[in-house]
Length: 105
Length: 216
Image (tube, rainbow over all chains, first blue to last red; front, side):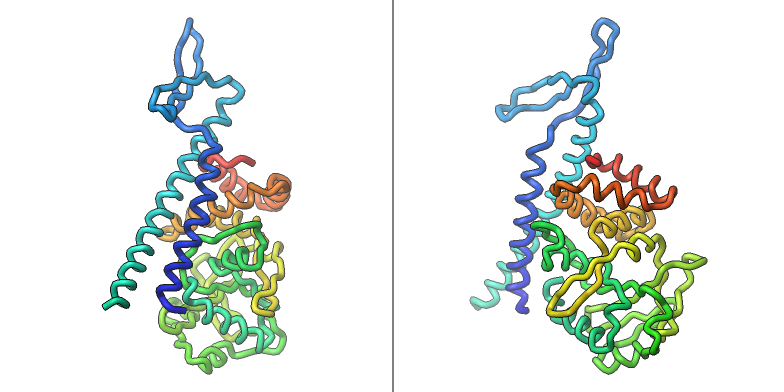
């Protein structure tokens, strides 16, 4: 298989995975969990910025705290995977450009 | 990986010609490739980029009629590398084929397969793979591969000891998780396989699942 075809296929596969990861990422909450002491009681809030850049403090119900923490860890993992994939795509694209230049010479 | 597809197909054909495929389980990144190509996992796309082909020998004393694996691969212009503890690795340019066996005794000792005439690298925690295989057809050949849940759990179990391959494996595990957890029977299948693990293996998996924030 010619290198150019290999790179094209690699980019296509990575892009398919990327869109799947993005879909999963968008289903997960973002931000960080912060405790607040109010009247001697501990409450937990999810702090993040919304799409307009406005800071949001969202109350987390006690029985949902563990679930939210888990989802944030998952988000962190998927973000890392996305970064890795984007990097791979970038490398493959530069390889493809180089091959194009080479064949135009 | 994709550029070695032809070499991979040739390897499968060669092993099939000598009736060896039924005695081997294809593990590692090419098994992931087949999850994608044979549609074992819905919509799955593997992330692996490595070229090595790894086979797990199901039973070191089979086939009953002994074969000379070294002679077979030398006949196909493969170089035989036995420099690492006498473990046999077949190489052709940057394409590599290795045979592994279930670890018995000391972790560092290679395992001799009298039936294949080679020494194979020993790999631990292989019971889950050995007990949970599926047969797929690729290029008209029947190939044994691990059930994807078994594959994923095995990768999790050996992950703490993977050294330089740890990160690459982590990516493969999480990639498989994202696709498998989309299916309706994810929880049922995961737990059924998890319950078959040893106490020590369960502990490793539980810690991993917690760290990654998986929903199980």
